[in-house]
Length: 366
Image (cartoon, rainbow, N blue to C red; front, side, top):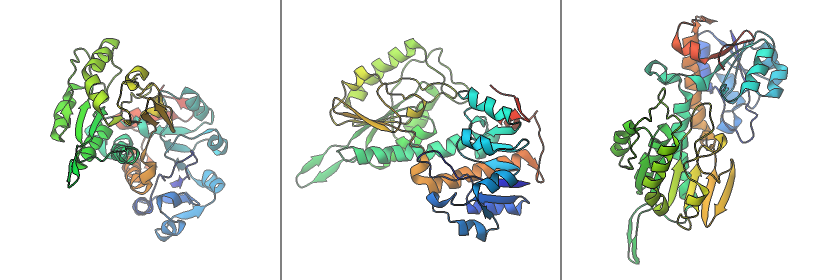
């Protein structure tokens, strides 16, 4: 089986789907690999690094023409699909629930497509879960970005000129990104508070040193390991419970996403107008509409002295580590899907069933 590694074309993307070390492991498992010229350069992986482990470095058109399996991180776009041939297998994040037109376009090409963002949240699939591996880095980078944008330091500091009080950090959403944000902010010396619709996250937040802001969540259950969309009543009660902490916070990080849906609004413009002058909001859900009502993706909006940064902050800014983790996820996934070097198509198996979105031009999942 020939596997082609494509260079990412999304604006600002710096990661690569397979790193030289993982390429070496795939070759040892019997696969033949081709990589597009310059695919790993922004993650500090040179073409020569791939050649040294046995990967053929080719032009983009050659990859599309010769590879049986095409790998990307971000969804295949319109330009990619022009080069795709019938019968090829595509593996990337597809966001199929919120991208029906893309899925139709892929099906029309007569190909098979697997979506890495559809990996089920089960223990057997943890080593394939790209959302977890990448969000872990996103939580870390959100705190580092916040530290850069703030006009204060995080820790309590005693100086001859006086005492500097520690900064206050508030985190919405205690998933993988939120937990890493808590841990990072605490290591830097901040006072950290956190909230989440899932009451089961309380113990996790407190184990990392955060104060958990409790909101009665009767009737608000999580779905498949993810937070579900909250009711209007819960949103009202959450605002009331969190407002005091929000208005005192120096840094706020929001991480709440619902697969296949617009991100929930957790901070309204009215609330932003009541926050401290100089406070910073890092909205990690901006690509899905934003947890803050005023945020816009890849923009910094200043409202009443509050800096609102809308970003996916995805781990593009730590692309070497992010690529390493994503590549390992892909490796485990490919090994799971294959027997020898051939696909085994076990549709009775949960991981394969959930991630196989299009099969030979037929849409399986909407």
